Image (cartoon, rainbow, N blue to C red):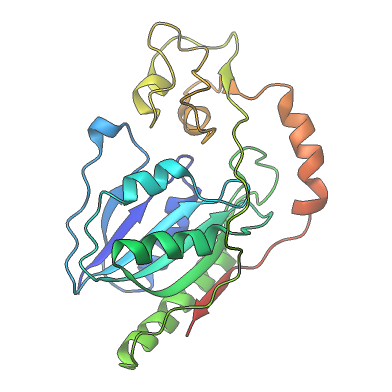
Length: 253
């Protein structure tokens, strides 16, 4: 059995959670990062005996449509998978059931689901430093529980997960732009997964293409990109929702 890790991680938090979980399986995973320019994305080859860890961030209670689009290029071949929805200490709402539906429709057997926390991708004062040491220990314990379940040999039964069908309405934005610190280096242009930033004018972006993933903000070498005055308003709105530390959750049959 190989461990295959498929992540969509624009700012790194989702990838870190997934890696901590994979460490608990005591086997180095094969890793595919789908948050990259389309031309640089090659779907992994999945075999029926593999265990696949599918990890996506949560945006306003949903998973990114682009993450789903990239994932659907993978041939599942009936492999078992663990879905991981990573959120910024607010709520994951319909993300897990959406991931379950997509993975099941593709032909995966969703044997476990995890809702995990990472630092908020926009308002980084919420969930700061997560996943932290406590999260790492919890991901290790989740991996052990999943392995025990797999070794038990019980027949596959679909999970019952929290969330709504139909899913809640998604939203767009906020859209990052660059300030006067921008050096026109082109890092954001080359790493944007949707091609929303023009090499001719890297200080702006195309709102029709931008998914607000904050990839450009996280990779800017001089910290020039952000959402400007919208940050304070968003932080104020989120404060009562993100004030308390949210727990990680494991769902197994």
